[in-house]
Amino acid sequence: MTGFDVTLFVSTFTTLFVIADPFGNLPVFIALTSRMTPRERRTAAWQATMTSFVVLSVFGLFGNYILDVLHLSVEAVQLSGGLLLLLVALQLLTGHEDDPGEPGSVNVALVPLGVPLLAGPGSIVAVMMAAQQSGKTSGGIWAVVVAMVLVHLVEWVTMYFGNPLHRLLGEGGTMFLVRISGMLLAAIATQLMIDAVLTIVAAA
Image (cartoon, rainbow, N blue to C red; front, side, top):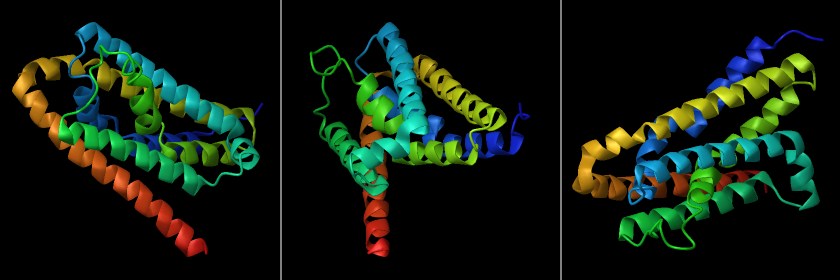
């Protein structure tokens, strides 16, 4: 049994933390769950976190195989993720976001919060690369697993304690935050798609 790979742990944790940006995503979480009760919001935080963890775990284990079988490129995943985020951003900007209490919107914690906001293309690629760098050794694998667990723990805690912030903002402040979040999310989505297109063009 090899020792715990501290270097891989630090690099994986840092990369995932920066990409996931749990504090930066908090306004988006509040915006998408603004009409939920505190209990529903806590449930959404847990579901989004677990969805992200499961998706990243699956791609860490079988990511390259999945993309090969489906004949997909990382850029295709990145483009589709960016498009999905852009659609959500437009709903926030136009005020037509679904009522969380209505059928069809109950899974907002799964999509778009869990995927692709938390487990987005960048996080998926980062986990796939970390899994390769682990060399399939026990120390390397544990380093990646612990890094993923800690990042998701931070994400969950951040969203879980979003309730006090929501109460502090009130309805007017929350609505303002919804619009600002829509703009930021649209920018993130656009950048994802631009990066994917530039990568495709550079490889052509």
